[in-house]
Each structure stands twice: as structure tokens, then as C-alpha cells.
Image (cartoon, rainbow, N blue to C red):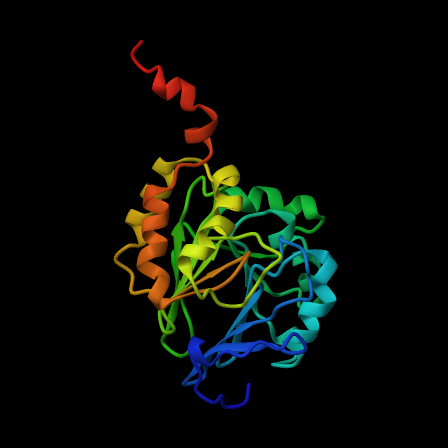
Length: 266
């Protein structure tokens, strides 16, 4: 990749005809690849480029593969993509993995063992598998690294998030995902964003216990942005509120089985 002009999230200006640079410094870049999906379930695909490594984060479904590939091609030849992170196996996250393995069969797949068990059902096996639970830190050529943090039952038992140590960006998968037709690339008002997150979290996330347990795993990280797979990006000014949102969230079994909890001990 050619030398990049320095950028950070505050400079990001979205244009759906091309990738949006979210971070660039010293040969390390993060891009939002975007798509033209106008549904409430709009998906975000990101690309991390570090010198001669290029790693897709949650490459997305088959429907938008060609569009995502075109965005990648505006940054580097798609066959140069060396890896993809799959935070879990859902089709909106992972179905295009088979297409990307056609582009570059030697591409490494970063995922958890529980996800890895299910991925061959997309029709492809025998690829290079990187176990993020056994090897939770992946070094990049620049000296930066990706740290993988397990997030069990948010919403899949094998879910995990990815932390970029140089940019201090957290790729959060479905955690802090939001659903809305009124979509922007970055969150402006966190309070106005909460109902959009609730539309996803109340039904999909397992419990407050799972949410609080995950926060304990990441609360010491220095996070400058949260990049979810659905919805809008949360800047550094929203990180503390985002952690509190999960700490206080009642969802999933807390709601469905609330009557059992209220009758506990009777």
C-alpha cells in the first residue's frame, strides 16, 4: 500500500462510492468499507492494513461481496488480503468467507473454536485457521497487534471482539450493534442512540450477567473508538457511556424469565 496521509476518526467523511479512512498513521490504516444496504440491519465491514498485511473484519454476507471487494480494490489488490476476522458464524458476518477464499485461498481465518466448528457448513474447509482463544494476540508488521477478547453469549457462545493496539479501536461485532433506518457513520448523541441499540440487545444478548462479565474483561483497555458490525461507530467521548450501557443492560433471559426471578424463593 502506498504511504498514507495521517487520519483519525474525527476526520472520517463518508462517501458510499469509496472506502472511508477511519485511522491512518505510520503505515497502519483502518477503513470502513461500507455498502449501500438501506435496511435497519445495515452491516459494517472494516479493513485493517498494516504494511504488507491486510485483514478484513467481519467480511459480511454474499449479497454485498462484490461491492465490498470493489471497495477493497480501491485500497489494494483484493488478492493481497491476507486474513479475515470472523467474530461469529452468522451469515451477515461470515457468509462471504467462501468468496474471499476464492480470491485468496491462502487467506488466514481468525476465529474461535466454537465458530470454526460451524463455518464449514458454508461449503468450504481446509483453509488456514487461526484460533483466537489459544493465541489471543496477533503481531502485525508495524509492531502493533490485534488482541482477541472472548465475549461468551454476546450473543453466541464463541463470540469475541478484536482490539487494535495502535489505533486503540475495538471491533465489537454484535456488541453495541444498533438497528435503524436513520443511520449515520458516527454516533452524535449517545442518549438518542440507546433506543437503536436496545432494538438489537434486548432480544439478542443473553443476560446482564454476560454483559457485565464482558465489560470486566475490557474495561482496562484504552479505547478510542468502538466499531460494531451493525449501526454506527462510537467515538472516544461515548466509550464510558457504552460500558455503562452494558453494565446496566437487562436483556435476553433477564426479560424472558423475569417471572422466575421475581418468584425466587417462594
